[in-house]
Image (cartoon, rainbow, N blue to C red; front, side, top):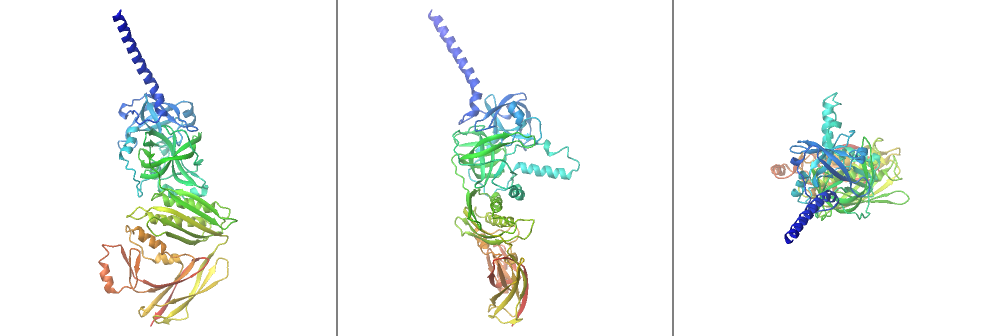
Length: 608
Protein backbone atom coordinates (compact mmCIF):
# COMPACT_ATOMS: atom_id res chain seq x y z
CA UNK A 1 0.00 0.00 0.00
CA UNK A 2 2.83 2.38 0.87
CA UNK A 3 4.54 1.59 -2.46
CA UNK A 4 1.32 2.45 -4.35
CA UNK A 5 0.92 5.80 -2.49
CA UNK A 6 4.56 6.67 -3.15
CA UNK A 7 4.16 5.86 -6.86
CA UNK A 8 1.00 7.97 -7.16
CA UNK A 9 2.72 10.93 -5.44
CA UNK A 10 5.65 10.71 -7.83
CA UNK A 11 3.31 10.66 -10.82
CA UNK A 12 1.46 13.73 -9.49
CA UNK A 13 4.73 15.65 -9.05
CA UNK A 14 5.87 14.82 -12.59
CA UNK A 15 2.48 15.79 -14.03
CA UNK A 16 2.40 19.12 -12.13
CA UNK A 17 5.95 19.92 -13.23
CA UNK A 18 5.10 19.18 -16.85
CA UNK A 19 1.95 21.34 -16.63
CA UNK A 20 3.90 24.22 -15.08
CA UNK A 21 6.50 24.10 -17.85
CA UNK A 22 3.80 24.05 -20.53
CA UNK A 23 1.97 26.99 -18.93
CA UNK A 24 5.20 28.93 -18.65
CA UNK A 25 6.00 28.43 -22.34
CA UNK A 26 2.48 29.43 -23.32
CA UNK A 27 2.41 32.63 -21.28
CA UNK A 28 5.96 33.89 -21.99
CA UNK A 29 5.36 35.39 -25.43
CA UNK A 30 2.33 37.35 -24.19
CA UNK A 31 4.22 38.92 -21.27
CA UNK A 32 7.56 39.73 -22.88
CA UNK A 33 6.58 42.62 -25.17
CA UNK A 34 4.48 44.53 -22.65
CA UNK A 35 6.69 44.44 -19.57
CA UNK A 36 9.98 46.22 -18.87
CA UNK A 37 12.59 43.60 -17.93
CA UNK A 38 16.22 43.78 -16.99
CA UNK A 39 17.02 41.15 -19.58
CA UNK A 40 15.16 39.77 -22.56
CA UNK A 41 15.91 36.46 -24.31
CA UNK A 42 17.03 37.02 -27.88
CA UNK A 43 17.28 34.99 -31.07
CA UNK A 44 20.22 35.50 -33.42
CA UNK A 45 20.09 35.71 -37.21
CA UNK A 46 21.58 32.25 -37.73
CA UNK A 47 18.56 30.79 -35.91
CA UNK A 48 16.03 32.49 -38.21
CA UNK A 49 14.35 30.28 -40.82
CA UNK A 50 11.81 31.10 -43.56
CA UNK A 51 8.24 30.33 -42.53
CA UNK A 52 8.72 31.08 -38.85
CA UNK A 53 5.76 32.82 -37.23
CA UNK A 54 6.11 35.70 -34.81
CA UNK A 55 4.60 38.91 -33.52
CA UNK A 56 5.57 42.61 -33.58
CA UNK A 57 4.27 45.36 -31.31
CA UNK A 58 3.53 48.99 -32.12
CA UNK A 59 1.10 51.74 -31.08
CA UNK A 60 -1.67 52.57 -33.56
CA UNK A 61 -3.51 54.91 -31.18
CA UNK A 62 -2.90 56.07 -27.62
CA UNK A 63 0.00 54.61 -25.64
CA UNK A 64 -0.65 50.86 -25.53
CA UNK A 65 1.29 48.65 -27.99
CA UNK A 66 -0.82 46.32 -30.14
CA UNK A 67 0.32 43.00 -31.62
CA UNK A 68 0.82 42.35 -35.34
CA UNK A 69 1.27 38.76 -36.50
CA UNK A 70 4.06 38.16 -38.98
CA UNK A 71 5.82 35.53 -41.07
CA UNK A 72 9.55 35.34 -41.81
CA UNK A 73 10.31 35.40 -45.54
CA UNK A 74 14.07 35.02 -45.21
CA UNK A 75 17.33 36.79 -44.39
CA UNK A 76 18.85 39.43 -46.70
CA UNK A 77 22.62 39.18 -46.39
CA UNK A 78 24.64 42.44 -46.31
CA UNK A 79 21.50 44.44 -47.09
CA UNK A 80 22.23 46.93 -44.29
CA UNK A 81 25.87 47.49 -45.20
CA UNK A 82 28.86 45.12 -44.94
CA UNK A 83 27.95 42.29 -42.56
CA UNK A 84 24.69 44.08 -41.90
CA UNK A 85 21.89 41.56 -42.44
CA UNK A 86 18.17 42.30 -42.51
CA UNK A 87 15.43 39.81 -41.69
CA UNK A 88 12.63 40.08 -44.25
CA UNK A 89 9.11 39.63 -42.86
CA UNK A 90 5.51 40.03 -43.93
CA UNK A 91 3.11 41.60 -41.46
CA UNK A 92 -0.27 39.87 -41.14
CA UNK A 93 -3.62 41.06 -39.87
CA UNK A 94 -6.31 43.64 -40.52
CA UNK A 95 -4.46 46.74 -39.30
CA UNK A 96 -1.13 46.26 -41.12
CA UNK A 97 -3.04 45.23 -44.25
CA UNK A 98 -4.94 48.54 -44.02
CA UNK A 99 -2.16 50.92 -42.98
CA UNK A 100 0.89 49.19 -44.45
CA UNK A 101 4.30 49.92 -42.97
CA UNK A 102 3.92 53.48 -41.64
CA UNK A 103 6.39 56.20 -40.70
CA UNK A 104 6.94 56.08 -36.93
CA UNK A 105 6.68 52.27 -36.83
CA UNK A 106 10.48 51.82 -36.99
CA UNK A 107 11.82 50.20 -33.86
CA UNK A 108 8.75 48.04 -33.28
CA UNK A 109 10.07 44.93 -31.48
CA UNK A 110 9.72 41.60 -33.27
CA UNK A 111 9.45 38.32 -31.31
CA UNK A 112 9.57 34.67 -32.29
CA UNK A 113 8.76 32.07 -29.61
CA UNK A 114 8.99 34.82 -26.98
CA UNK A 115 12.53 35.77 -28.04
CA UNK A 116 13.41 39.23 -29.36
CA UNK A 117 14.88 39.02 -32.87
CA UNK A 118 15.14 42.74 -33.67
CA UNK A 119 13.40 45.96 -34.69
CA UNK A 120 11.07 46.63 -37.59
CA UNK A 121 13.11 49.23 -39.46
CA UNK A 122 13.05 49.03 -43.27
CA UNK A 123 10.43 48.91 -45.98
CA UNK A 124 10.40 48.55 -49.77
CA UNK A 125 9.88 51.97 -51.34
CA UNK A 126 6.66 53.81 -50.57
CA UNK A 127 4.13 52.34 -52.95
CA UNK A 128 4.36 48.68 -51.99
CA UNK A 129 0.95 46.99 -51.85
CA UNK A 130 2.05 44.49 -49.20
CA UNK A 131 3.25 45.21 -45.64
CA UNK A 132 6.68 43.67 -46.21
CA UNK A 133 9.44 45.03 -43.97
CA UNK A 134 13.05 44.54 -42.95
CA UNK A 135 14.09 43.84 -39.36
CA UNK A 136 17.40 45.04 -37.88
CA UNK A 137 18.80 42.14 -35.80
CA UNK A 138 18.81 42.86 -32.07
CA UNK A 139 22.46 41.74 -31.74
CA UNK A 140 23.49 44.64 -34.02
CA UNK A 141 21.49 47.09 -31.90
CA UNK A 142 22.96 45.84 -28.62
CA UNK A 143 26.41 46.82 -29.93
CA UNK A 144 25.35 50.45 -29.36
CA UNK A 145 25.00 49.82 -25.63
CA UNK A 146 28.43 48.24 -25.34
CA UNK A 147 30.10 51.22 -27.07
CA UNK A 148 28.15 53.97 -25.26
CA UNK A 149 30.27 56.45 -23.32
CA UNK A 150 27.38 58.96 -22.86
CA UNK A 151 29.62 61.80 -24.03
CA UNK A 152 28.02 63.63 -26.95
CA UNK A 153 30.29 64.29 -29.95
CA UNK A 154 29.48 67.92 -30.74
CA UNK A 155 31.52 67.96 -33.93
CA UNK A 156 30.36 64.72 -35.55
CA UNK A 157 29.70 65.12 -39.24
CA UNK A 158 27.47 62.15 -40.04
CA UNK A 159 24.26 62.38 -41.96
CA UNK A 160 21.05 60.43 -41.97
CA UNK A 161 21.16 57.24 -43.99
CA UNK A 162 17.84 58.01 -45.65
CA UNK A 163 19.23 61.29 -46.95
CA UNK A 164 22.36 59.59 -48.25
CA UNK A 165 20.32 56.90 -49.96
CA UNK A 166 18.13 59.49 -51.64
CA UNK A 167 21.17 61.43 -52.82
CA UNK A 168 22.78 58.26 -54.18
CA UNK A 169 19.57 57.25 -55.94
CA UNK A 170 19.19 60.71 -57.44
CA UNK A 171 22.76 60.67 -58.74
CA UNK A 172 22.33 57.23 -60.23
CA UNK A 173 19.11 58.20 -61.95
CA UNK A 174 20.57 61.36 -63.44
CA UNK A 175 23.63 59.45 -64.64
CA UNK A 176 21.60 56.77 -66.37
CA UNK A 177 18.87 58.19 -68.63
CA UNK A 178 15.85 56.00 -69.03
CA UNK A 179 16.45 54.12 -65.80
CA UNK A 180 13.09 55.04 -64.26
CA UNK A 181 12.00 51.40 -64.05
CA UNK A 182 14.93 50.56 -61.77
CA UNK A 183 14.07 53.43 -59.46
CA UNK A 184 14.57 54.10 -55.79
CA UNK A 185 11.03 52.96 -55.07
CA UNK A 186 12.21 49.34 -55.39
CA UNK A 187 15.00 49.60 -52.82
CA UNK A 188 14.94 48.74 -49.14
CA UNK A 189 15.09 52.00 -47.22
CA UNK A 190 14.66 52.97 -43.57
CA UNK A 191 11.09 53.48 -42.43
CA UNK A 192 10.81 57.25 -42.12
CA UNK A 193 11.17 58.75 -38.66
CA UNK A 194 8.95 61.79 -39.17
CA UNK A 195 10.85 64.91 -38.16
CA UNK A 196 7.74 66.97 -37.62
CA UNK A 197 7.89 70.78 -37.66
CA UNK A 198 5.08 72.18 -35.51
CA UNK A 199 4.31 75.89 -35.45
CA UNK A 200 6.32 76.42 -38.64
CA UNK A 201 4.98 77.85 -41.87
CA UNK A 202 5.41 75.84 -45.05
CA UNK A 203 7.55 78.67 -46.42
CA UNK A 204 9.95 78.45 -43.46
CA UNK A 205 10.42 74.69 -43.85
CA UNK A 206 10.80 74.95 -47.63
CA UNK A 207 13.40 77.72 -47.52
CA UNK A 208 15.65 75.85 -45.10
CA UNK A 209 14.99 72.31 -46.35
CA UNK A 210 18.30 72.18 -48.24
CA UNK A 211 20.27 73.25 -45.15
CA UNK A 212 18.49 70.63 -43.04
CA UNK A 213 19.12 68.02 -45.73
CA UNK A 214 22.85 68.82 -45.81
CA UNK A 215 22.88 68.28 -42.04
CA UNK A 216 21.18 64.88 -42.45
CA UNK A 217 17.58 65.90 -41.74
CA UNK A 218 14.60 65.52 -44.06
CA UNK A 219 11.85 67.84 -42.74
CA UNK A 220 8.22 66.67 -42.69
CA UNK A 221 5.28 69.05 -42.46
CA UNK A 222 3.49 66.60 -40.24
CA UNK A 223 0.82 66.78 -37.58
CA UNK A 224 1.60 66.62 -33.90
CA UNK A 225 3.51 68.58 -31.32
CA UNK A 226 5.39 68.69 -28.03
CA UNK A 227 3.64 69.14 -24.69
CA UNK A 228 4.52 68.85 -21.01
CA UNK A 229 1.50 66.72 -20.17
CA UNK A 230 2.09 63.79 -17.85
CA UNK A 231 1.72 60.32 -19.30
CA UNK A 232 1.13 57.77 -16.53
CA UNK A 233 1.57 54.70 -18.72
CA UNK A 234 5.12 53.30 -18.50
CA UNK A 235 7.37 53.06 -21.54
CA UNK A 236 7.60 49.43 -22.71
CA UNK A 237 8.82 47.65 -25.84
CA UNK A 238 6.45 48.75 -28.59
CA UNK A 239 5.74 52.20 -27.06
CA UNK A 240 6.10 55.35 -29.13
CA UNK A 241 9.10 57.46 -28.12
CA UNK A 242 10.28 60.90 -29.28
CA UNK A 243 13.53 62.84 -29.75
CA UNK A 244 13.29 66.63 -29.49
CA UNK A 245 15.38 69.07 -31.53
CA UNK A 246 13.40 72.25 -30.76
CA UNK A 247 10.71 72.74 -28.11
CA UNK A 248 8.66 75.66 -26.86
CA UNK A 249 6.63 78.07 -28.99
CA UNK A 250 7.98 76.12 -31.98
CA UNK A 251 8.71 72.40 -32.03
CA UNK A 252 10.79 69.95 -34.06
CA UNK A 253 10.47 66.33 -32.96
CA UNK A 254 11.13 62.86 -34.34
CA UNK A 255 9.18 59.77 -33.23
CA UNK A 256 9.82 56.06 -33.55
CA UNK A 257 9.20 52.94 -31.43
CA UNK A 258 10.97 51.34 -28.45
CA UNK A 259 12.69 48.04 -29.25
CA UNK A 260 14.39 47.06 -26.01
CA UNK A 261 14.32 48.46 -22.48
CA UNK A 262 15.96 47.77 -19.13
CA UNK A 263 16.48 49.65 -15.88
CA UNK A 264 19.09 52.08 -17.26
CA UNK A 265 18.45 52.65 -20.94
CA UNK A 266 16.43 51.77 -24.03
CA UNK A 267 17.05 51.09 -27.72
CA UNK A 268 14.74 52.32 -30.48
CA UNK A 269 14.25 52.89 -34.22
CA UNK A 270 16.48 50.12 -35.63
CA UNK A 271 18.14 52.72 -37.88
CA UNK A 272 19.63 56.17 -37.27
CA UNK A 273 17.72 59.42 -37.07
CA UNK A 274 20.78 61.47 -38.10
CA UNK A 275 23.68 59.04 -37.51
CA UNK A 276 25.62 61.70 -35.62
CA UNK A 277 27.20 59.23 -33.20
CA UNK A 278 27.16 60.82 -29.75
CA UNK A 279 24.21 63.17 -29.26
CA UNK A 280 22.44 65.00 -26.44
CA UNK A 281 18.71 65.25 -27.15
CA UNK A 282 15.63 65.21 -24.89
CA UNK A 283 13.95 61.79 -24.78
CA UNK A 284 10.21 61.91 -24.12
CA UNK A 285 7.21 59.65 -23.99
CA UNK A 286 4.75 59.98 -26.86
CA UNK A 287 1.02 59.66 -27.43
CA UNK A 288 -0.18 58.47 -30.83
CA UNK A 289 -3.36 60.37 -31.69
CA UNK A 290 -4.00 58.42 -34.88
CA UNK A 291 -2.32 56.39 -37.60
CA UNK A 292 -3.02 57.79 -41.05
CA UNK A 293 -3.02 55.20 -43.85
CA UNK A 294 -1.81 56.34 -47.26
CA UNK A 295 -0.24 54.49 -50.19
CA UNK A 296 2.17 57.41 -50.65
CA UNK A 297 3.07 58.48 -47.11
CA UNK A 298 1.40 56.68 -44.21
CA UNK A 299 2.40 58.11 -40.84
CA UNK A 300 1.49 58.40 -37.17
CA UNK A 301 0.10 61.65 -35.74
CA UNK A 302 2.02 62.00 -32.48
CA UNK A 303 2.29 64.30 -29.48
CA UNK A 304 5.58 64.09 -27.59
CA UNK A 305 4.85 64.31 -23.85
CA UNK A 306 6.83 64.20 -20.59
CA UNK A 307 10.66 63.93 -20.61
CA UNK A 308 12.19 60.71 -19.32
CA UNK A 309 15.90 61.16 -20.07
CA UNK A 310 18.25 61.89 -22.93
CA UNK A 311 19.23 60.29 -26.21
CA UNK A 312 23.00 59.81 -26.08
CA UNK A 313 23.76 57.65 -29.14
CA UNK A 314 22.52 57.87 -32.74
CA UNK A 315 24.11 54.99 -34.63
CA UNK A 316 23.73 52.97 -37.81
CA UNK A 317 21.48 50.31 -36.25
CA UNK A 318 19.43 52.45 -33.87
CA UNK A 319 19.39 55.10 -31.17
CA UNK A 320 20.09 54.69 -27.47
CA UNK A 321 18.64 56.71 -24.60
CA UNK A 322 19.48 56.81 -20.92
CA UNK A 323 17.05 57.51 -18.07
CA UNK A 324 19.77 59.01 -15.82
CA UNK A 325 20.72 61.86 -18.19
CA UNK A 326 19.30 65.37 -18.51
CA UNK A 327 20.02 66.94 -21.90
CA UNK A 328 21.40 70.46 -22.28
CA UNK A 329 19.42 72.72 -24.61
CA UNK A 330 20.01 76.35 -25.63
CA UNK A 331 17.25 78.65 -24.28
CA UNK A 332 16.17 81.35 -26.75
CA UNK A 333 14.09 84.46 -26.09
CA UNK A 334 13.00 86.34 -29.22
CA UNK A 335 10.94 89.55 -28.94
CA UNK A 336 9.34 91.45 -31.81
CA UNK A 337 8.51 95.15 -31.27
CA UNK A 338 6.58 97.43 -33.55
CA UNK A 339 2.98 96.43 -33.04
CA UNK A 340 0.35 97.21 -30.45
CA UNK A 341 2.42 95.30 -27.90
CA UNK A 342 5.66 93.31 -27.99
CA UNK A 343 5.42 89.64 -28.92
CA UNK A 344 7.84 87.30 -27.21
CA UNK A 345 8.72 83.74 -28.22
CA UNK A 346 10.40 81.29 -25.85
CA UNK A 347 11.92 78.05 -27.08
CA UNK A 348 14.94 75.77 -26.72
CA UNK A 349 17.27 74.50 -29.43
CA UNK A 350 19.51 71.44 -29.41
CA UNK A 351 23.30 71.79 -29.09
CA UNK A 352 24.91 70.37 -32.21
CA UNK A 353 27.60 71.81 -34.48
CA UNK A 354 25.71 71.06 -37.70
CA UNK A 355 22.07 71.39 -36.68
CA UNK A 356 22.05 74.27 -34.19
CA UNK A 357 22.86 76.97 -36.81
CA UNK A 358 20.16 75.62 -39.15
CA UNK A 359 17.59 75.32 -36.36
CA UNK A 360 18.31 78.90 -35.28
CA UNK A 361 17.88 80.17 -38.83
CA UNK A 362 14.58 78.38 -39.31
CA UNK A 363 13.12 79.48 -35.97
CA UNK A 364 14.17 83.14 -36.37
CA UNK A 365 12.76 83.34 -39.88
CA UNK A 366 9.57 81.58 -38.83
CA UNK A 367 9.02 83.94 -35.88
CA UNK A 368 9.55 87.09 -37.96
CA UNK A 369 7.29 85.90 -40.77
CA UNK A 370 4.58 84.71 -38.40
CA UNK A 371 3.59 88.04 -36.82
CA UNK A 372 0.90 90.39 -38.09
CA UNK A 373 3.41 93.24 -38.21
CA UNK A 374 5.29 91.55 -41.06
CA UNK A 375 5.11 93.06 -44.54
CA UNK A 376 7.17 93.01 -47.73
CA UNK A 377 8.45 96.56 -47.07
CA UNK A 378 9.49 95.83 -43.48
CA UNK A 379 12.91 96.83 -42.12
CA UNK A 380 14.34 95.08 -39.05
CA UNK A 381 16.58 96.58 -36.40
CA UNK A 382 18.24 93.72 -34.51
CA UNK A 383 19.78 93.82 -31.03
CA UNK A 384 20.81 90.72 -29.13
CA UNK A 385 23.52 88.52 -27.72
CA UNK A 386 24.69 84.92 -27.61
CA UNK A 387 25.97 83.97 -24.16
CA UNK A 388 28.93 81.56 -24.23
CA UNK A 389 30.10 80.18 -20.90
CA UNK A 390 33.61 81.44 -20.06
CA UNK A 391 33.74 83.98 -22.90
CA UNK A 392 32.53 87.46 -23.79
CA UNK A 393 28.97 87.58 -25.14
CA UNK A 394 28.64 87.59 -28.92
CA UNK A 395 26.87 90.84 -29.80
CA UNK A 396 24.15 90.77 -32.45
CA UNK A 397 23.51 94.26 -33.77
CA UNK A 398 22.51 95.00 -37.32
CA UNK A 399 19.82 96.41 -39.58
CA UNK A 400 18.10 94.62 -42.44
CA UNK A 401 15.95 96.09 -45.20
CA UNK A 402 14.28 94.66 -48.33
CA UNK A 403 16.66 94.37 -51.27
CA UNK A 404 15.42 91.55 -53.49
CA UNK A 405 11.67 91.21 -53.97
CA UNK A 406 12.06 87.43 -54.31
CA UNK A 407 13.87 87.02 -50.98
CA UNK A 408 12.11 88.03 -47.75
CA UNK A 409 14.12 90.31 -45.49
CA UNK A 410 13.60 87.85 -42.65
CA UNK A 411 15.66 85.35 -44.64
CA UNK A 412 18.67 87.69 -44.58
CA UNK A 413 18.17 88.14 -40.82
CA UNK A 414 18.09 84.38 -40.31
CA UNK A 415 21.24 83.81 -42.38
CA UNK A 416 23.08 86.45 -40.36
CA UNK A 417 22.12 84.79 -37.05
CA UNK A 418 22.91 81.30 -38.33
CA UNK A 419 26.30 82.40 -39.62
CA UNK A 420 27.25 83.58 -36.12
CA UNK A 421 26.36 80.20 -34.65
CA UNK A 422 28.25 78.40 -37.39
CA UNK A 423 31.43 80.35 -36.66
CA UNK A 424 31.10 79.78 -32.90
CA UNK A 425 30.88 76.01 -33.37
CA UNK A 426 33.52 75.94 -36.13
CA UNK A 427 36.64 75.92 -33.98
CA UNK A 428 38.91 72.91 -33.48
CA UNK A 429 39.89 73.68 -29.89
CA UNK A 430 36.91 73.68 -27.51
CA UNK A 431 33.28 72.67 -27.51
CA UNK A 432 31.35 75.92 -26.95
CA UNK A 433 28.82 75.90 -24.13
CA UNK A 434 26.12 78.31 -25.26
CA UNK A 435 24.00 79.19 -22.23
CA UNK A 436 21.39 81.45 -23.82
CA UNK A 437 20.30 83.59 -26.75
CA UNK A 438 18.42 86.88 -26.60
CA UNK A 439 17.08 88.58 -29.73
CA UNK A 440 15.11 91.82 -29.98
CA UNK A 441 13.70 93.13 -33.26
CA UNK A 442 12.19 96.53 -33.99
CA UNK A 443 9.99 96.34 -37.09
CA UNK A 444 9.76 99.49 -39.23
CA UNK A 445 7.09 99.54 -41.94
CA UNK A 446 9.37 101.12 -44.53
CA UNK A 447 12.21 100.14 -46.86
CA UNK A 448 15.02 101.98 -45.13
CA UNK A 449 17.95 101.66 -47.52
CA UNK A 450 20.41 104.33 -48.61
CA UNK A 451 23.00 104.05 -51.39
CA UNK A 452 26.24 106.03 -51.42
CA UNK A 453 25.90 108.32 -54.42
CA UNK A 454 28.88 110.62 -54.13
CA UNK A 455 31.89 111.40 -51.94
CA UNK A 456 34.32 114.31 -52.18
CA UNK A 457 36.88 116.40 -50.31
CA UNK A 458 38.00 119.96 -51.03
CA UNK A 459 41.68 119.21 -50.69
CA UNK A 460 44.08 117.24 -52.84
CA UNK A 461 47.12 117.61 -50.56
CA UNK A 462 47.54 117.27 -46.80
CA UNK A 463 50.15 116.80 -44.11
CA UNK A 464 50.45 114.18 -41.34
CA UNK A 465 48.31 115.25 -38.39
CA UNK A 466 45.85 117.27 -40.50
CA UNK A 467 42.10 116.73 -40.17
CA UNK A 468 40.20 116.50 -43.41
CA UNK A 469 36.43 116.40 -43.98
CA UNK A 470 34.78 113.97 -46.36
CA UNK A 471 31.43 115.15 -47.70
CA UNK A 472 29.08 112.37 -48.76
CA UNK A 473 25.72 112.19 -50.48
CA UNK A 474 23.45 109.17 -49.91
CA UNK A 475 20.25 108.43 -51.78
CA UNK A 476 17.49 106.73 -49.73
CA UNK A 477 14.95 104.49 -51.38
CA UNK A 478 12.31 106.87 -52.78
CA UNK A 479 13.60 109.74 -50.64
CA UNK A 480 15.51 113.00 -50.76
CA UNK A 481 19.33 112.93 -50.75
CA UNK A 482 21.10 112.88 -47.38
CA UNK A 483 24.31 114.90 -47.02
CA UNK A 484 26.76 113.88 -44.28
CA UNK A 485 30.19 115.24 -43.45
CA UNK A 486 32.68 112.90 -41.81
CA UNK A 487 35.88 114.35 -40.33
CA UNK A 488 38.97 112.13 -40.08
CA UNK A 489 42.52 112.86 -38.91
CA UNK A 490 45.61 111.75 -40.81
CA UNK A 491 48.02 109.95 -38.44
CA UNK A 492 51.28 111.74 -37.75
CA UNK A 493 53.15 108.59 -38.81
CA UNK A 494 51.66 108.57 -42.32
CA UNK A 495 54.50 108.51 -44.91
CA UNK A 496 54.72 110.89 -47.83
CA UNK A 497 53.02 109.85 -51.03
CA UNK A 498 49.56 108.70 -52.10
CA UNK A 499 46.94 108.02 -49.42
CA UNK A 500 43.76 106.17 -50.36
CA UNK A 501 40.53 107.07 -48.57
CA UNK A 502 37.79 104.41 -48.66
CA UNK A 503 34.21 105.56 -48.11
CA UNK A 504 32.01 102.51 -47.75
CA UNK A 505 29.36 100.49 -45.98
CA UNK A 506 30.30 98.09 -43.20
CA UNK A 507 29.93 94.95 -45.31
CA UNK A 508 32.49 96.18 -47.86
CA UNK A 509 34.91 97.00 -45.06
CA UNK A 510 34.54 93.53 -43.52
CA UNK A 511 35.11 91.88 -46.89
CA UNK A 512 38.41 93.71 -47.19
CA UNK A 513 39.54 92.26 -43.88
CA UNK A 514 42.11 89.50 -44.50
CA UNK A 515 40.81 86.00 -43.87
CA UNK A 516 42.69 82.94 -42.77
CA UNK A 517 43.70 80.49 -45.51
CA UNK A 518 41.62 77.36 -46.02
CA UNK A 519 41.85 74.85 -43.21
CA UNK A 520 43.19 77.43 -40.73
CA UNK A 521 40.63 78.24 -38.01
CA UNK A 522 40.80 80.50 -34.98
CA UNK A 523 40.21 79.52 -31.39
CA UNK A 524 36.85 80.37 -29.85
CA UNK A 525 37.99 83.51 -28.03
CA UNK A 526 39.54 84.99 -31.18
CA UNK A 527 36.47 84.09 -33.21
CA UNK A 528 34.18 85.89 -30.76
CA UNK A 529 36.49 88.93 -30.79
CA UNK A 530 36.33 89.06 -34.59
CA UNK A 531 32.54 88.77 -34.57
CA UNK A 532 32.22 91.60 -32.08
CA UNK A 533 34.55 93.80 -34.17
CA UNK A 534 32.56 93.48 -37.37
CA UNK A 535 31.11 96.69 -38.75
CA UNK A 536 27.42 97.59 -38.50
CA UNK A 537 25.57 98.06 -41.77
CA UNK A 538 23.66 101.16 -40.65
CA UNK A 539 26.76 103.36 -40.55
CA UNK A 540 28.89 105.03 -43.24
CA UNK A 541 32.63 104.45 -42.76
CA UNK A 542 35.66 106.46 -43.85
CA UNK A 543 38.95 104.51 -43.74
CA UNK A 544 42.53 105.59 -44.49
CA UNK A 545 44.53 102.99 -46.42
CA UNK A 546 48.31 103.23 -46.61
CA UNK A 547 50.46 101.42 -49.14
CA UNK A 548 52.27 99.55 -46.37
CA UNK A 549 52.01 95.86 -45.51
CA UNK A 550 50.00 94.76 -42.49
CA UNK A 551 49.84 91.43 -40.70
CA UNK A 552 46.91 89.71 -39.05
CA UNK A 553 47.81 87.29 -36.26
CA UNK A 554 44.72 85.43 -35.05
CA UNK A 555 42.18 88.22 -34.41
CA UNK A 556 44.70 91.08 -34.08
CA UNK A 557 45.70 93.41 -36.95
CA UNK A 558 49.17 95.00 -37.01
CA UNK A 559 49.12 97.88 -39.52
CA UNK A 560 51.96 99.72 -41.31
CA UNK A 561 54.74 97.31 -40.32
CA UNK A 562 58.34 98.21 -41.24
CA UNK A 563 60.03 95.78 -43.60
CA UNK A 564 62.48 94.68 -40.88
CA UNK A 565 59.57 93.60 -38.66
CA UNK A 566 57.85 91.86 -41.59
CA UNK A 567 61.02 89.85 -42.26
CA UNK A 568 61.03 88.64 -38.65
CA UNK A 569 57.30 87.84 -38.66
CA UNK A 570 57.60 85.97 -41.94
CA UNK A 571 59.31 83.15 -40.06
CA UNK A 572 56.34 82.90 -37.70
CA UNK A 573 53.92 81.70 -40.38
CA UNK A 574 54.66 78.06 -39.66
CA UNK A 575 53.90 78.43 -35.95
CA UNK A 576 50.93 80.84 -35.96
CA UNK A 577 47.88 81.69 -38.01
CA UNK A 578 49.16 84.78 -39.78
CA UNK A 579 48.37 86.46 -43.09
CA UNK A 580 49.80 89.54 -44.77
CA UNK A 581 47.99 92.28 -46.68
CA UNK A 582 49.55 94.84 -49.04
CA UNK A 583 47.59 97.74 -47.51
CA UNK A 584 47.11 98.94 -43.94
CA UNK A 585 43.97 100.57 -42.52
CA UNK A 586 45.57 103.20 -40.28
CA UNK A 587 42.50 105.15 -39.18
CA UNK A 588 38.73 104.92 -39.34
CA UNK A 589 35.75 107.20 -38.72
CA UNK A 590 32.01 106.71 -39.17
CA UNK A 591 28.64 108.37 -38.97
CA UNK A 592 25.37 106.63 -37.97
CA UNK A 593 22.31 106.49 -40.20
CA UNK A 594 18.93 104.91 -39.64
CA UNK A 595 19.29 103.17 -43.00
CA UNK A 596 20.97 100.07 -44.35
CA UNK A 597 23.91 101.65 -46.17
CA UNK A 598 25.37 100.26 -49.41
CA UNK A 599 28.06 101.37 -51.83
CA UNK A 600 31.75 102.32 -51.80
CA UNK A 601 34.06 104.92 -53.34
CA UNK A 602 37.79 105.66 -53.10
CA UNK A 603 39.39 109.12 -52.97
CA UNK A 604 43.12 109.86 -53.19
CA UNK A 605 45.08 112.66 -51.54
CA UNK A 606 48.79 113.38 -51.58
CA UNK A 607 50.61 113.48 -48.26
CA UNK A 608 53.36 116.12 -48.23
